[in-house]
Length: 440
Image (cartoon, rainbow, N blue to C red; front, side):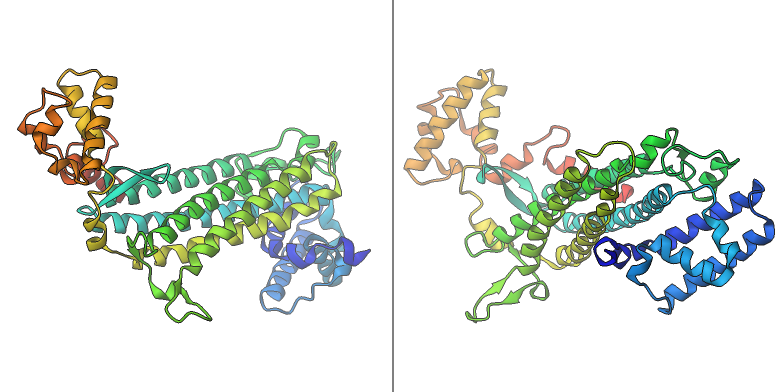
């Protein structure tokens, strides 16, 4: 039974948060007269000694103590006797566990935010180095329109900024103190929850003991934020895996982040990117696990909730490790400019710009769309880019065209034509780079 029900093998990582919460709780008990000042002093000193034992590897974690909360309390009682037994006055493991986990998620989210900012900085560095690189942008994995390399990099700055915002929102809902709500209904003892709230850095106290005892929304919020970060990383990894192939040959990955084939000596495999892509599924799996964990639980606390820790701990660890290795990989990757430029006119990336050129001449969008489609078909039949298609061929479709059309044809001309806010136009991209430098 002990082996089956223990959680100390993995929740021991909450030791700092448990001790900090217990110190604040003891100080509140002393202030309200539930324990003496001398008791409080002994409890504080005992808890700090236990922290030292844990950090020095001198603390024995055993299944008989079930979880980190009981382990710390058991050791405190060993040290102080009845004084140690007073610490659990006016609290339950239910509100204690929730408090500790909320503090852990708050700390982990702040670390995640910092690591995401480093990832954004890596993409920004690449953006500053690719303001003159033109890439084909894709929809449906088919070439669509030209974009600056810098514009592509900043797209990921935006995605990961939303991830940072999500972690900020996680902390807003997470930063509510459940300690003091007891097992399910509160306590008749004269406690001061606001004092503990301030000491532990929470925004407010929970207002319903039933909800506080049962709530794990904050864990799901965090895992959802982690899942989206993992999915964003996975999409980026998939792109660079494709782009590093011979077929694309857009990017050269640093060999330190690749491996060799055990059989084929010429192969260099993008294993880090593949692992990042694979680990995203693991995090999404944890989110599904947590959703099904709570879907049928009646109020209030149920032991099922012990199973929330493995998923959220591993989800944070997994995404954090992906972020740590993604940053230097991005910083050290090189773009194969010659290979990209050689095939840039393939795919008729300037076709949409030609359509908009006709619209500016007063031709309705649908009419212009059809006309350019016909012109592109002529270029495809003659196996030539639009910029090399003779004028009379284009005029056979749209007689209003003249030699000025060549000023907007060709990928470089088409890219320079972009002017809308948020577009890939050089002036817009330059402004966005300046904005991101300031924000980061």
